[in-house]
Amino acid sequence: MRPVIRYLTLKETVEALLPSAEELSKRNVQLSHRKLEKLRRLKNWDTNDDTFVFFHAKTKEGRITRTLVTFREYIRQGGVLLMAVSLDNDGRILEVRLMEAPNFVIQWIQPILRSDYLDSFKGKDHRLDLELGPEYRDRFSGITQQFALKMANAVKKSAQLFMVEFYVK
Image 1 (cartoon, rainbow, N blue to C red):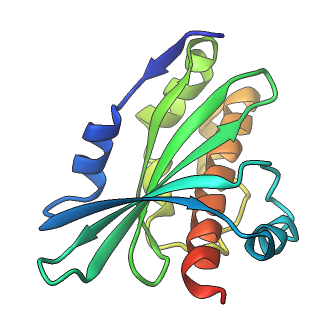
Image 2 (tube, rainbow, N blue to C red):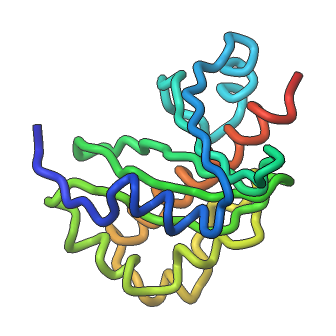
């Protein structure tokens, strides 16, 4: 097991990405075969995971106002980027955070975290483009670009997961 750097605990993540929730709920979701097949048909869906965690911010009346998805993105070098994505009820991305990463990739992850890259996903949905804009290609080294794209793929998969779980019958 490789050591990891924890940027945010789960409690800190929920507090940051589900602000001012009157009530919170947690759902462990195991995807049905039909939903997994739908996701696997997507070009970027490459995970074998079938169980995910959703957190919901709710009103006192029980209406969901915001959803948080935690997603593990496996990296080729070994280890996991643990991402957190909050979405509105239409599946638009509100905020993205990196919760943890293997410590041996920190030198390539830090430039991403110091930039506005994670904020660039705001307002996008499950159809987001998996290409780096020129502003990031110019600022990030080659390997940092690869990690940025891994993060983007985790964000996209989180939004796809949200859509399949809540909108596919």
